[in-house]
Image (cartoon, rainbow, N blue to C red):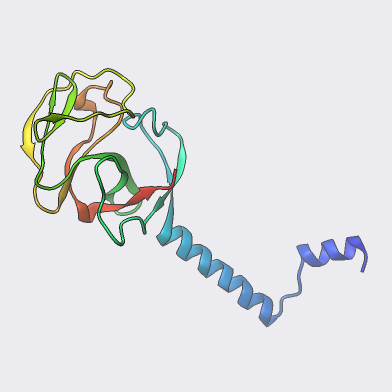
Length: 166
């Protein structure tokens, strides 16, 4: 078999029942993997800078919390409108904990929390509030933005779809 005939066979295979079965298996596997397990995401906005940049790409791994819930410090994908619109946010407090911002410093249960991922200075003020049962408290990493420009706060764990792969 010549190089040209091998290339032609590769580019234009004969359509046999075996070929159709393989093509259907690849299509089904791709649909299941990228539609339900690794959901492609394009980052829009600056609320997670510098961890996730505007225009960046990642996958949301939906199996991340099958055997346990999110922990403080995790970056999670939160369902806003189905699986088409999701927010990336960081978990800063868990259910039953009291969260506040004083002079830009995150406080959980009255103690300052070190946040090495926050790179810009922050002047946020937020009165203490207790995180309800079945919920977590989420905030973006870009604290240099005014608090009014952020979507943040308490959200039910049931709305968390998964976590980004990288």
